[in-house]
Length: 227
Image 1 (cartoon, rainbow, N blue to C red):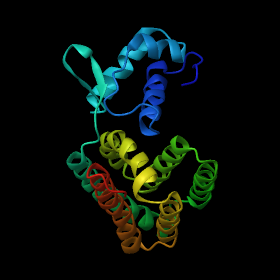
Image 2 (image 1 turned 180 degrees about the horizontal axis):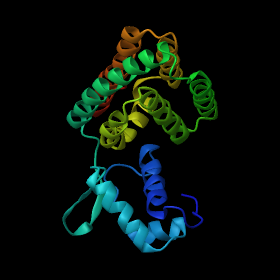
Image 3 (image 1 turned 90 degrees about the vertical axis):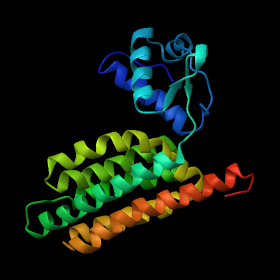
């Protein structure tokens, strides 16, 4: 972890730093997190660390284990699938509405979408998994915004907090990053073309395929086989 300079939303930044390390494997499942150690690494006081860890516990990333305090939980595959099912429905609706908005001439998102695609490809080339997940999230939020339904992003937010960890596992074990970003480009293409049905189906397939492949990959690993 790198030291953090003060002060925008320090709790949020500590949250992001801890979650990034969990997502990229630097902090593994079962690890006991010590507030003082994390505060020292990030060069912050204990208060934002305590608050960030409380948020991670609420999101199911950390759990109280006896007297040892908070530990990183294993990824719950059944819960992951439930989150992906809901996200698929929301993403499909967002892509559909975004395509309708584009077709009616009320949305312009080609430049923004292509910029995110370039940033995602650069993160893949650099092997920066945390950046890949951030740009992945940014892409889908762009589609939510383009849908012109402000309730979609708010409804998806708790699922995204949980699935950021699953997304990093998808990148590491289940799907190549190039495949994921090709799917993003195909979703964007359908949205820009105003093809609501295709955009929706591609968004749904993108989510559900990731969930299925991740479930199989992690199940194989837990059985001692290679994914």
